[in-house]
Every structure is written in structure tokens, then in C-alpha cells.
Length: 353
Image 1: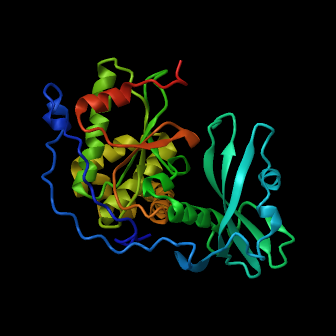
Image 2: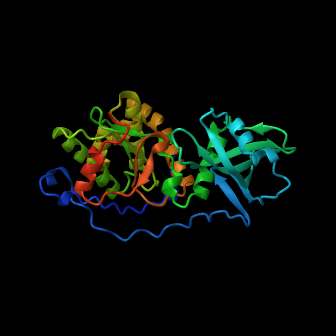
């Protein structure tokens, strides 16, 4: 797959001045000189309660419409907290409060409408409450409810998943919060035993700054390991802006190796160091080497899925950093110096032994 350059806008302003730190300078490249970022392409305007927004999901075009709270077309059961709890199928330790229908989405299936419901959920994991967005589907007479996967068998994709990702990006005040790293494919740099929950680093290895930031972080992690500092695992999530086809192929192959033998990180380090000189990226070799072609075939779908999520979240800045796992993964600011990175990588969380 060829990724369009406008798929994910990249403004790499990573401030990892790790090379400036005395004592471990040999492990890091010099930081790149800042350059003027390219002018960003116009992002779709967020939908508002006042009108409609056209949703473009690949070759599919849908319409997202604003709805008023007193709209007679809204099913009463979408405004009922108890009914929503029953529809979600949650257990006794889960409850939903203040559901509000905020958008109606024209489904690609004739006669089926999607309703976007915003509500606050409470559970053992989030006793303080968590703002959630749900998408429910109903027929024209609003009698039947549909929840879950909506598979386009011709294109082999879950349309409901794509719509939910779009909705998160449409409603989020910050694209980084619309992204769900727990739903994205990663290559993992293993941490020490009992080292705490992982950190997640979202990056594009196309630009030089992306390669440098990836290498800096891997090398710092290795340095901490050698020093017995018990660093946490790192999940590297790779996305592509499509500006460098070699990089896109390399990241896809890295995913293929991660899937087959859990050594995706070492392959990506080799690429980040050698770029187009990486031996397994040679076009003649790739055409004949069935192993590399297989790895590329496996990984390209992971790259496509990740980059699609970044696009639907309206992401315009990389790299991004998240701390924690699952639904507790939280976007945090990038550390600004080596000491802060060390502290983050070696910090234990409350769930660690």
C-alpha cells in the first residue's frame, strides 16, 4: 500500500537533548538542527451541533449530523442510563450516567442509522468516572438495536470500528487523547522483571528526527539495563506520513519480524542507523527473498491500521508518549532532559510489586 503524504501530518519537534548529557554521550547522536516545519495541510473542521460534517473513510463517504436533545427521531432508550447499561452488557460494578445523544451518523448500510452517545461511566477501575463515547445503530423505525462489528466483506474491514475512531477524533480537544495506543500495533522492547507498566512511544521513522528519537530512546534503555536500573518496557507504535516509501516498508518489515520472532526492534534499529543502505531493503533482494516479502506482507496491514487510526484521530504532531497499559494509558508530555527520561523509564507504578 502506498501511503499518501497528507495521511498523517508530522511536525517533529522532539526535545530529547540526550546527546548533551555527559557520561552517556557516546550512545546518542547529536540532536538535529531545527528546521522550519512544512505548512500543514488543512484538517477537516470539527463538526458542531449546528450542522453536518462529511466523513471520508477511505473510499467511503458518510454524513455526521447534529441532533437536538428534543429531536423526536431519537429513540427514548438512548436517553435512559439503565437501558444503556443493559445494552452494553456491563456487570454489576458498572454504571452509566447522563447519557446524551450528540450526533447521528448516516450508516453505509441503507436504513441503518448510527447514534453517537456521550456518557459518564463508573466502574471499579474508574470510580471517579470516565467520559465515554458509544455508537449504537438502529433501523428506520427505531425498534431494533445493533451493537458491535459491522463488517464490509468486500473490503475486509470493520466499519463500526472506523466510525468509532472518527468520532473520537471529532470530539477530542487533543488528537493525542483521541488516539488509543492500546488498540494499535507495537514492537516491544522488553523491560526488566517487575519494572512496572510500559511506556508507549508513537513515532514515524521516515524523517531523520524520527529515526534519531527512536535510536536515542532504545540506546538509553539499553544503557539503563546494563547499569542494572530495571527499565520499564517500551511499546513502539509506528505510523507513516507516507513521505518515505523505504521507511514505510522498513517499519512494515519490522512488524513482520516482531510477529514472527519478536525481534522487530533490532531490525528497526538497523534501519534507523543505516537508512536506505539497510541490506534487506535492497529492491533486488526484496524481490527475490520470500522471507522478507512475507514479513512485508504481514506488517503492511499493521502499518495501514496504525496510520489510519492516526488519520482519524486528526493527529498532527509526533512523537507522542503514553504511560500505562490498557485503558489506563495516558498521554504525557515528552521529558525535556536525560534525567527526566531516566526517571520515567525506571519509575514503578502502583500496580508493580
